[in-house]
Image 1 (spheres, rainbow, N blue to C red):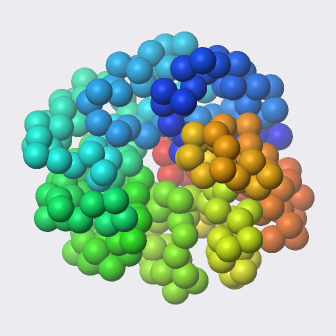
Image 2: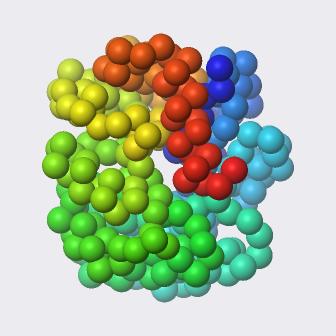
Amino acid sequence: MVITDTHTHLYSEAFDADRNEIIKKAIDLGVERFFVPAIDSTYTKSMLDLETDYPEHIFLMMGLHPTHVKGNYKKELAHVEEQLTKRKFYAVGEIGIDLYWDKTFLKQQQEAFVYQIQLAKKNKLPIVIHCRESFDEIFEILEKEKGPDLYGVFHCFTGTLEQAHKAISYNMKLGIGGVATFKNGKIDQFLNKIELEHIVLETDSPYLAPVPYRGKRNESSYILNVLEKISIIYDQTKEEIASITTQNSKDVFGI
């Protein structure tokens, strides 16, 4: 059984003490592919080092995270563009809009999101969207940018069934992680109304650990808890869910 974690921040400082151990633990449990999103330029070297250490397992993205869109965002976007010309990445991400932490740079977040969508189209890559308290703002931009060259993953999807269908209409898979295991997560109540072809699995580690680890540091091996919950929701075996969602990730990321 091959399992794919389509979103994990393995370079995070949260893993500095035991990074190799938690990666090897996940691999031993069948998690063979880790898709690693970017945050900003300060993490680029750590990401490249990860790939060097685990070339058969690590698949890197490049992008500017919306919470890191600050006064120097144009310089950061230039870094993203430069990196995309230097080597292969599997997506532009994570990008989008976050209105939970700070609304000060909304205009700049919108500009950065559009700019990076254009970079993805230019490089024929998918996008990985970060959306927190910003569905309307995200959809407004996707509506303008939609087309056969726009596709990707709606990372950490926590919206309604209606919002799920809207995201899917823009050629987006839904990234499903620990929230599906939460009692108040809500998405577990309607997820089985969405065809499995639209779903990929993720952890977003070290964040959003699933039950029974909620509130603790998340890690990629905990995707098995997400897998178990999804198998219950869809009434299919874990092997079937792993196979379908891994194939979906291959379709999106082109591997």
